[in-house]
Length: 200
Image 1 (cartoon, rainbow, N blue to C red):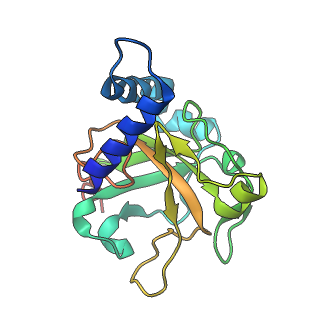
Image 2: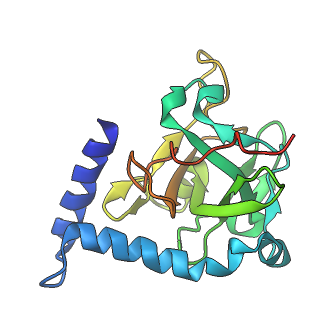
């Protein structure tokens, strides 16, 4: 249901933006994701990502919705590879914090990989993240948006098992999935991505 609602938001946002004649809203979303995927193609080799300054999430976690107090059927995110400079990381304890306001998906701050049984990694999407305080201090009154969709607000809720913000201070983030997501290719979790293939 949530995916359907977001699809409506995307369509409405694109309609308001005024698309060129002959291009549907769905085509615009598809074309944008295809362009982002093409720009990130070199990162299919994780060694290229490492050489360009991405580092694996120090926790080593392959993120699953069910382990963060959310319904397991939402799916997984995979393993995050981060560009600390684009995130503007200023602290890692007690929680990760930063001053970055980077929103360019053609040069993403985060790469999403699905671990394989043989130890290899498959690039399945990208993500950008801005910390709420830094975003507001930069003069923004509303969350960032992409293709008419407001980015997801993430903050840990101590009343819910797990850490919904994955060890980060309150932030906005937006995922773009290259692997087709039955919930919607801009949703935070993807049921078609699995952490369970990971080698022991």
